[in-house]
Figure 1 (cartoon, one colour):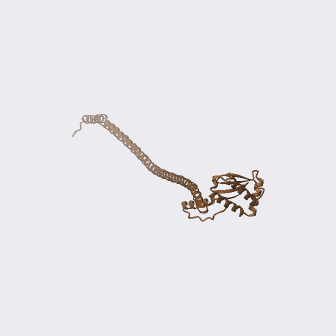
Figure 2 (cartoon, rainbow, N blue to C red):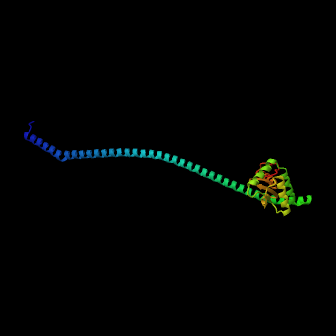
Length: 263
C-alpha cells in the first residue's frame, strides 16, 4: 500500500491544529477552572481552619470564664455566708445587750420601788410605834410618854463612863454655843430645868445648855456638844425593825441585832 504523503502531512497538520484548538479552548479553561476551584476550595478550607481555630480559642476563653465564674460564685457565696454569720452575731449581741440593759433598768427600778416602800413603811412604823408606845405606857404606868423618855435619857446619862463624860464636857467648853439638848417633842420650862440640872450634875457643872426640837429623833432626847453626843430614842428599835424588814424582803433571813443604847 502506497502512503500518500500529502494526506499524511495534512492529517498531521489537522491533528496539530485540533490539539492547539483543544488546548486553547478546552484544556486551558478546564485547567484554569480547576485551579480556580482548587484555590477557592483551599481558601475555604483555610477559612474553615481559621474559624475552627477561632472557635477553639473562643471555646477556651468561654471555658476559662466559666471556671472563673464558678470560682467567683464560690467566693461570693462564701463571702455572703460570712457576712450573714457576722450579721447574725451582731444581731444576737445587740439583742443580748438590750436584754442586759433592760434587766439592769428593771433591777434599778425594783430596788428604787423597794427602797421607797421600805422608807414609807419605816415612816409608818415609826408613827405607829410611837402612838402605840405612848398609849401603852400611858395606860400601864399612868405617866405620859415624854416624861418616861426624859427619865430613860437621864438614866442613860447616869450610866455613862467617866471618859465619855469628860469628852462631852471638853467638847462643850470648846464649842461657842456649849451643849444642845434636842427632843422630838416640846417640853415645858420645868422639864428643861430638870434636864439642865441633870447634865450639870452628871456631866460637868459648868456646861451651858440650849434646847431644840426635831421630829427626826423619833421619840427621843439627844445631848450634843461639838462632835460628841449622848442620846436615847426609839430610832434604835426602828432601825432594828428596818433591818429585819429589809432582810425579809431580800430573802436573806431574819436579823437578830442587839438593842443599842445610843447612836
